Amino acid sequence: MKWVLFVAGRLLARKGRSSGVSVLSALGIAAGVMTLVAVLGVMNGFQSSTIDNILELGSYHVRIATDSPILSPEHSAAIERLRDDPAITAAVPLMEIQSLARGFWPETQGVLLRIVPEEWLELDPGAAGQLQIRSGEFDLRTPGSIVVGSELARALGVRVSDPVQVMFIPGGGSAPREVSMTVAGVVQSGYLDYDRAWAFASFATARDLLEATEPVVIGIKLMDRFELDRGRAAIATATGDAFAGATVQTWREFNRGIFGALRVEKTMMTLLIGLIFIVVGANIFQSLRRSIFERAEDIAILNAIGAPPRSVQTVFVLEGAIIGVAGAVLGTMLGLFLAYNINDVFRVAEVVLTALASIVARVRGVPLQAVRIFSPAYFYLTDVPVEIFAVEIITIPVVAITTALSAAYVASRRLARYRPSELLRDE
Image (tube, rainbow, N blue to C red; front, side, top):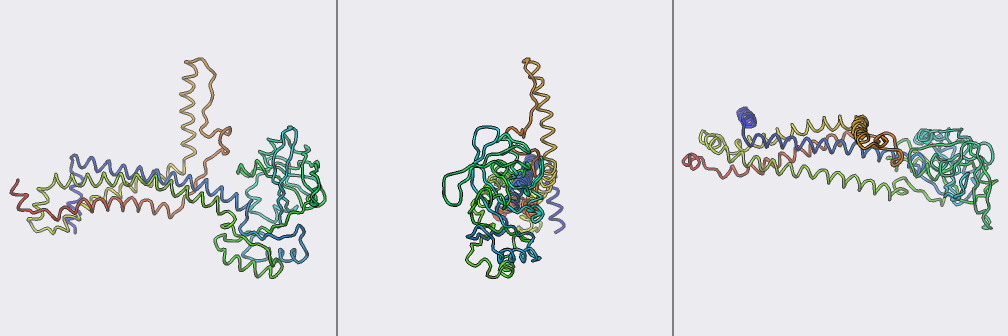
C-alpha cells in the first residue's frame, strides 16, 4: 500500500496539463463547498429568525382553541397546572380580533389586535426576548391602553400617548363602532408582518371596551418544541377534562404552509448550488482519463513488474480523493470564514462601492449618495443573521469528496482493459 501512496503523490505532483486540470478541479470543489456553506449559513439564519418569531410570538408550540370568550375557574386552574409542569415553559391565554384603526393620518390600517394578559411578558419570557420596546412601556394595566408595532405606528402616524381610533363589531352583531385608545408603547419584533399589523391590548379592554366575543386560545410553549408527543402527554395530564372538546394544534400543523415553503426553498437552493459538484465531477473524470492516457507507458511498466490492476486503479482513485479532500477542506474553511464575517464583507463592499460612487459623482457633478447594500428603505434588517448547523458542515464536504471519488473510480475503470505487452510494443 505504501508504494500506491508514493506513486499517487508523484503522479499528482508531476507537472503537466493534467496536473493543472487537477488543481482547477480542486479549486472548483472548494468554490462549491464555500458557496454552499456560506449560502446555507445565511439561509439558516434568516429561516431561524423567522421561525423563532412565528413560534415565540405567533403560533406557540401547542394551541388549545376553546369555544368560549371567557375563561372559567376550571380553565384558569388548568392553566396554572400547565405553568407548574417542568416540561412546559409558558401557558398564556390570548384572543385575536381583526379590526381597523386610524391615527394621525386619515388612512385606515388593518390591525390584528392580540388580547393578552397584562403580565404577558412576565408569563412568557420567550415572547419578551423577541420584542424590543422602541418607546414607552408594554403597559396594558390602564383600561383603553394599546401597544402597537413599530411599522404600524409609522403607518398610523402615532407615538406614545397619542390616541388611536379602533373600529370593532360588537359581539351582538350590531353596527360597527369606533373607540379611542391610547398608545402606551411601541414595540418591534424584527418580523415585518407582525410589526406592520399587530397591536396588543388587555382582556379587560377587550371585554369592557370592545365587547369582544372571539374564543380564547391557550398558547403553550414546551421545553423542547420537537418533543411534541411528550408535550401532548404533559398537557393532557395537567388539563384533564378542563378543555374537553377543544381543538389542539401543534406548531407543525398550524404553520404547515409557511414551514413547508421554507423547507422547499432551502432544498431547492441546496440542489441548485450543488450542481457545481456535478460539473466539477465531470472535470475530474475528464482530467483523470487524460492523465491515464498520458501515463499509459508508466501504467504498462507497473503492470509488467507485477503491480495488480486493482492497485494501479487505486493510484488514480487516490488522486481523485486527494483532489476532493483538498478542495473540501479549503472550501469549508473559506465558507465558514465568509459566513461568520458576512456582515463585515458587506460593510467593506459598501465602502468600496461608495468610494467608486464618489468618483462618479465628482465627474458628473451630482450629489454623492452612500451605497447601502441592505438599505432600510428596501430591506427590513440591519445585519444578516447567520446560523451554522454541524450536520451540514459535515455533509457538504462528504458529498464533495464522494463526488471526486466517484469520478475517479469511473475514470480508472478502463485500466482493466490495458495490456502491458501491447502498450510497450507500441512504444
